[in-house]
Image (cartoon, rainbow, N blue to C red; front, side):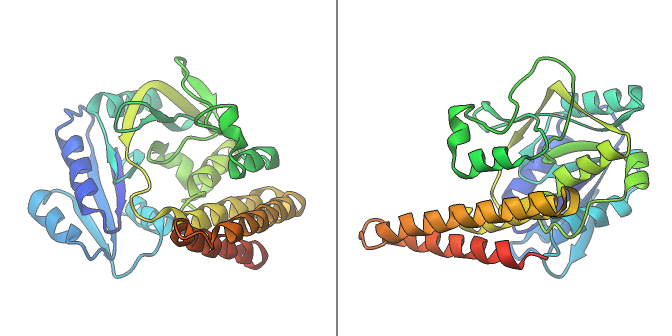
Length: 298
């Protein structure tokens, strides 16, 4: 197994992740490559000092998660590739279980399990491929009335074939990647994992959720919520554009633009209030960026 991590100014979490990996009593053979996207926080020096066994690929700027992950995949040769976020804590038993299941299940293109918050509560398990109804419920937050973790399908105690699993800790078969191709580098961040697993399903491979696999995931440590919103929405619209055709692509763009206009009106009312002005300013700018993206994404 080859383990690929991408790092961008996340030294503390990266160090904790690698400690959990090397102290996790992993029985499977593995090698580790870290692709650094031009960090300026001393990540490279920490890696050389603390983890000399790790292969480092150094980029001079942030080339994005998809492209950096592909660099790591292409630099390794393991039969299975573990895509692992640097803000995770792993355990050897779960990683061994993923490798064992993949070895015994020839139609498995990818496997994953539950992502947990640091307090042990469920963060995410598995998802269905996006629909316009789902995206409306997410954007308006009405989905939280259906499930606190909507649209995640929630915990199941059974091994299941699912649409897609978050790539914070996702084991992928190299033979499947050889068939369908690597991550689509047009996704700078967000959306690439759903696209990859969509293509796996189209290629005849299955994605399995393993209930006994757990990974602690801090999440969202590389950018603030307002910067992240634009990138998340970009990933969603790009996924529709690449996989769903012009009608549904037009539908999601119009819906997101319309909801962003509504949010502009709401935050515009809140802006004059002194205790709301700072946040309102950020929300106004963020929603303007989303509206601009809805018309200009190519």
